[in-house]
Image 1 (cartoon, helix red, strand yellow):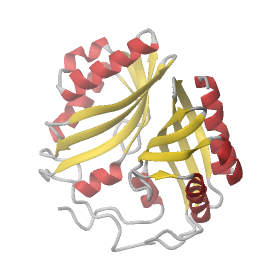
Image 2: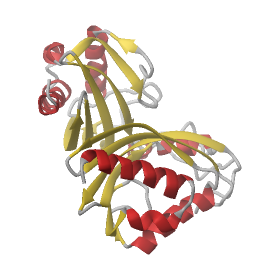
Image 3: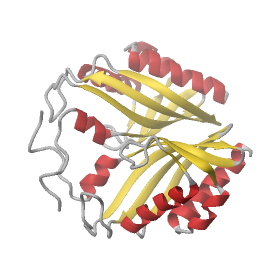
Length: 147
Length: 147
């Protein structure tokens, strides 16, 4: 696909799969093998997952923050890559491993580079602002202890 | 400049100015007005700064971590934009506002989109993994308190 078509695929993946929870159409965009190359703190970091696991990943995120929305800030596409800057909002009404539902709203940001091969997305390299996320969820950062 | 030339400028900016501390040649790359559009936790976030302030920004970072090195992971360029994924290493031998020198090594990552106009870089939109940074510097995250 052209860089322009790749951008369109990313916009639809984010809007329809991640924002609207229409998991089934992930098949249109995601390769049978998808590698989470780099995503600090992500449960699947470094793993190559199949489509069912990809959908489970979306579902688990939406179970924790059912009203989640990604807002695309900008897109940069070249060859088989699309970089996306984004903002994210949601309310934590579900439990996280060490953080039961807080019912707090969050508003954070991140950047992702998606990689394509044979018209499908084969993985990503991502960093998101988890420090702000934890702070907004009421997790204490520092103050008590340094070193 | 072409996207390819823009990439070359970013590689040189990171290598020569940020990694080697050759502040003076920042003039070759950085516009007279540079806007830090988005960079959570950065002291200049949202501000438009002049060249002297840009150099001060590099200097302050290098004062805290004199051995700092950015390693470019990937570059994605289109039109007047260059997205960069990167890793960063350094040792905190200088003081941060609420964190005196820990002498600890850090190894984190981030992503940046740089914006160009008239052959110069006019600003960036960036997210870096500050949660890992604070954790590696020994700042306590959560555990004690939730909600």
